[in-house]
Image (cartoon, rainbow, N blue to C red; front, side, top):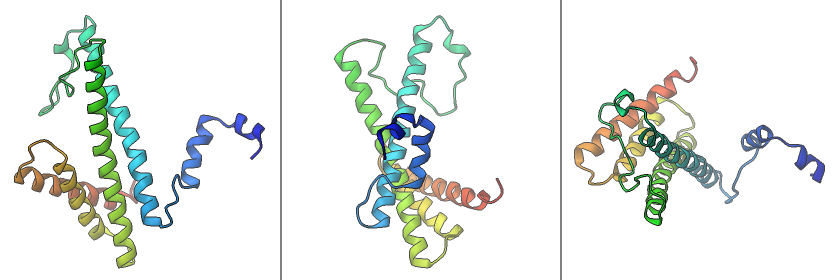
Length: 176
């Protein structure tokens, strides 16, 4: 490509190019797919973790009554307990640590799911709800293992939830 074409490309053009080519070439489509899914989802996870902390910092630092902010059932108000709006190394270290953990969980989830669905499609010769059940269950169980103090019940619950969500997404894919 010429230098003029690179300067004239917009952000939207750059984002569209992700669909056309692959980010990685490890020599096998399965490895390429897992790596691409991991990197893309890890980036989304990092953005989600940082934006959540920015939101809580803004709510805590403003005169907004936190009672007006809707609480989600089962959700903790603050995911990053070490961050207290301070501008010091400990606060930054906690943000990086928690953002890294969140990124890893999102990337792991996407990489495992993508790899299993690809492998099952190649092995079975078709992509149907059965592939989605298996991929969702394994991915849900793997995600549960990244949580702190995982119990057997949490592992089973995450596996069932992953299978249900994956199957529903597969069945509803053609409708929406």
